[in-house]
Image 1 (cartoon, protein in one colour):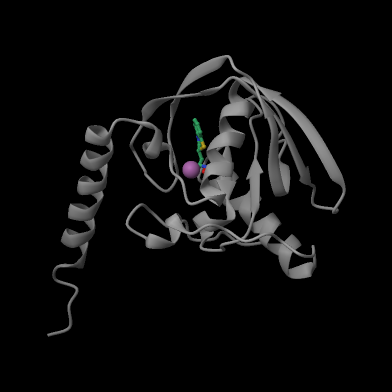
Image 2: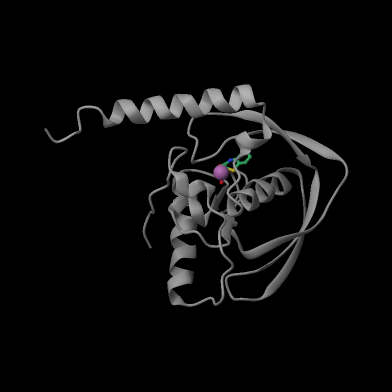
Length: 176
Ligand code: GNR
Ligand code: NI
């Protein structure tokens, strides 16, 4: 198992629409295990494959508390079958947008169908934090970020901040 590099806001790959997974082979289960390790190491409570630069419809989540043993869940080709009309607001963050947090309103509950690590079809009725994280991750599979759910003013501000930081990091590293 190994840690994978997590791409950040300036990387245009984050806007790709990820493609469905056709088979769960050795290469994929290795990616799944690396993603779980990368998520736990970050630390984070979710990770979509595109965040480690793999544009495929795969995500992992783990919303176990700090005192509990790890409880990673794997979702291959997830689909939202149903979402509640009632909504919830959570302060969200994203490993691809480090140190930025904002309130996001989403459906409070969702029913999601996916394949697990063994290729078995599963359905979960998620509420609370799990419902929020699953929607955040499924957004990633469609090239969406949580900042797409906040005001344009706030979104443009955080995008600009990251562009400036990338520019600064690039200066001085040019070969003369
Ligand atoms: O670690 C994460 N925490 C989090 C908190 C509130 C709502 C969503 C998340 S997901 C995030 C990890 C991540 O970026 N997943 O894509
Ligand atoms: Ni994220």
